[in-house]
Image 1 (cartoon, rainbow, N blue to C red):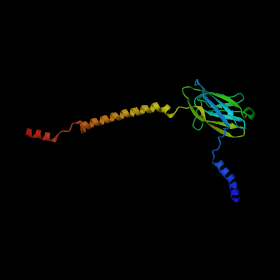
Image 2 (image 1 turned 180 degrees about the vertical axis):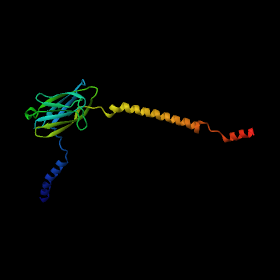
Image 3 (image 1 turned 135 degrees about the horizontal axis):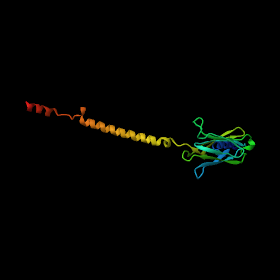
Image 4 (image 1 turned 180 degrees about the horizontal axis):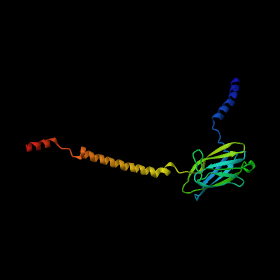
Amino acid sequence: MRMVDCRLRLLPVLAGLLALSAPAAAKEPSVTITGGLQPDGSYYRWEIENHSSSPVVSFEFPHYAADMFQVPKGWKAKSKFKDTPGTENDPWTCKAWVDSPQDGIPPGGKVSVTMRVVLLESRKGRGVVKVGLADGKMLEIAGVELPCGPSFFERFGLLITLLILIGLVALIAARRQHRGRAGLGVGGNRPVDSNLHQTSNSDRA
């Protein structure tokens, strides 16, 4: 009986250990952002859906080379576009917010936002969108399809390739010139055999 009693007492402990070792169930994100570049390539459209218990009262989209940002009715917006200098610490962004949580995205609700981009300058990429809730939480939604800037190679690849080609041509020319000088000898004259030179002097004598 005592042995059976001890085993029964161990059951809750084992159950707790199994619960800790089991992988945690995937938690549904509080806010989801779906969508991205549209088929014609001129603009992006996203749907922001609120799965939390608090209204969404703000969101901020980073971008590259956008020139227009459309937000839902009742929202305010402030954007920094191409004509305003952007830096790493102060990048180009499109922000939107509401003054009252009642005007935000309610729990279970969703809205659409649109951003127009300059076709030849932006590239489709992935980034982080910041979303603010009425309860004060600030969420960072990663993996959102966004208009991004060209890569380093896209910006300077042609220039780098030209510089490399110029350097190779100059190196080849310098090696050929060095080989030519080595073949002629010092001073540009061919080396003379000393034995032949002595023979010619004895003949003259």
